[in-house]
Image (cartoon, rainbow, N blue to C red):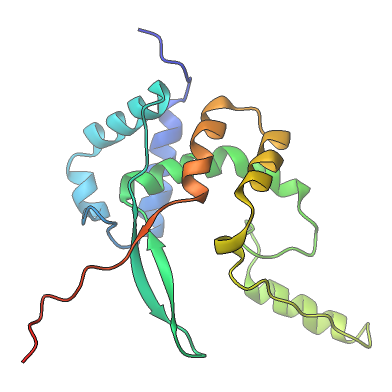
Length: 185
């Protein structure tokens, strides 16, 4: 039986190796990378098969509150291991196509660039210019127009399976942490 999307198994394997290298906590299913590895062949095959057949849907994302220095908390979303493998597979295809389109002064979430690189550039430029413009888009990922984002993606990517799954990735549902099992005294 022919599957609607031709996704190489080697891509899924490469994605898993990167997820394992990066580490990370278990998602909402409580499955660690080590537990995922106990049934690695079956887990990767199931993920690949679902991606190729068009039946893959990511799980909700586990929400973990992270304290902010300024007070309050922000929610950190932790996907399941399988969902991180799927996301990484998409990234392995998209990043080389999309990254060259970014402005050379863009440093956030870029391969081979870091916050330290951005700081070094600011230091160097502080000797060249008399002024600095600084801005931060508060809640960018919470407030970005996903329709606009998808239109931009469609302009630069014509791979059907990525266009099918990317909307789920950028709008993942974050489930709040379960209440503590402690009883009040």
